[in-house]
Amino acid sequence: MSTTTTPAATRTHRRFPVTAAQLPVVGTFVVLALMLIIGGMRYDNFLTVRTMANLLINNSFLIALAVGMTFVILMGGIDLSVGAVLALGAIVTASLLRDGFPIWIVLPLAILTGTAIGLLHGLFIHYFKIQPFIATLAGMFLARGLCFVIAPESIPINDPSFVALAGINVPIGSGDSASRARS
Image (cartoon, rainbow, N blue to C red; front, side):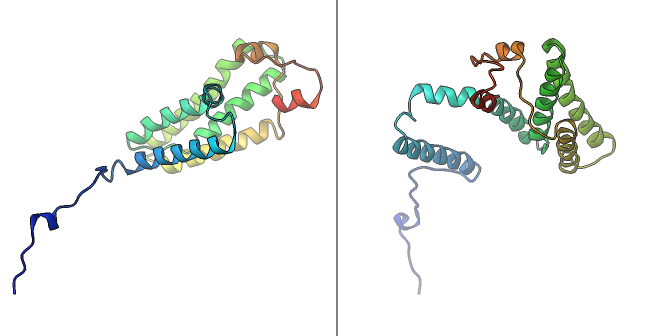
């Protein structure tokens, strides 16, 4: 009892040939498209150029971090401390500006803070042969703890030079709740 198969029965048709390696990228674009469609249906001005530009501007720091993390992940590494180190840099910036330091000293110190933690990660990983996951997890807890030690509560940034550098046009020190919410 032999069965014969025709070439048409063994052939599979795929309209969009997607490999397993491409699946996460395709999934990301599908989720993005769904978010844009749902947002456009629920909110009138969601799909305008101005809204999209505001989303990119307001999240530019996340885009920069994501590009950096992409290179880390592509090289087979991992860094769990990125968000906590960013928060530590922001807390250092806010606390030093609150204490009256000039912005030309504050910004390099904030960058050096993040650089020092990254250097510690690299030293632990290279010289002590600690897994990057563990080293950066410890660095994340270190940065979070330092944030809490430096400022257990929120610090508003009211320094005029920082606001001018950021390009924000809000009244500083007016004392109303709206300006406190923006800072």
